[in-house]
Image (cartoon, rainbow, N blue to C red; front, side, top):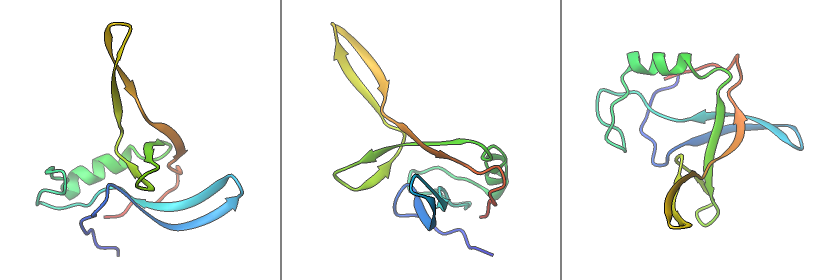
Length: 106
């Protein structure tokens, strides 16, 4: 049994295993379950966590990698002024997917 504990960063990557030079397998902690607010002031109860977990198998893993911090950030967007108009552009890239047989724990 793994206990759900608060994270200091948006994600934590554990147990990295290289499959080949281009593919690795790992465990990723993306949230913690609690009746108390988390670091971004939201509450994910165990019931809600189970609902979220059901949508994970086969889901893409996308994010924004901050080279300066050497870390992944949230799903960023860029607000730019282009040709006299404001545009909103997603600043994320695909990095992998959740295995359809991956275990989910809280």
